[in-house]
Length: 265
Image (cartoon, rainbow, N blue to C red; front, top):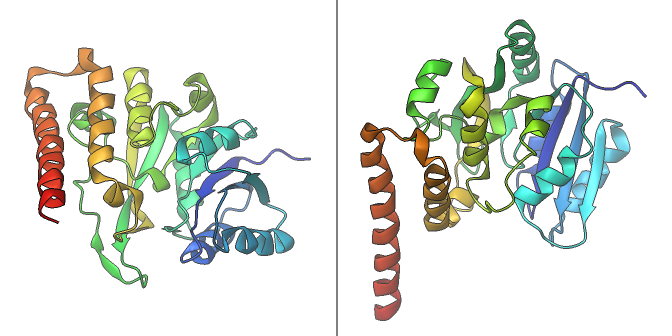
């Protein structure tokens, strides 16, 4: 069997609402030399049936079916063990990749061997797929600027990235102690010794709803972000301390207001 140039990793847990659109956006890519590993993380909705339906008509799809729910971090690491390709691309089960995403990312990576992690600009869409606008986070393109700001905020959309497989495996994949912000923690490790950048093209549509993990678990997400930053405390400059303290204050404020709300409920 020919080894593909790219392997796409997707983990799905109860993603039936947007899963068809997400999978189609990968299968319709202009660049077709890829395999597509989908981990069904013990979904209780129709996600497994949707994946199997696509698998019947596409030999690119490799299904891993978890018997119990283990979360995104461990699911991605399980999929990573099966990867033999030169590059790994991420796709979330509620996002949409532009048809030229892989083509443009691959061309860039092949001509810029010093770049180990590559993200893109993205649009934000609502439940219906309507474009709400460009990304709400500040866009940073160059590696030097990403390195300067990485401890202030996450400059990459997880579902937009393409990473060199050898670097991912050198890092031993995602840190399984991180139930949330696992992508941010990985970027911090990669940027210790390697370069990364973002393409100045909107190659992904990121769905923003109340059910996305980062919103549903906002306090936990923030706590894990702080944990990732503290893990790499030696890299934090004095000018970054303000942002770290701000993160900690937000977590404290959120948890206090949560307790007060419960008390008056």
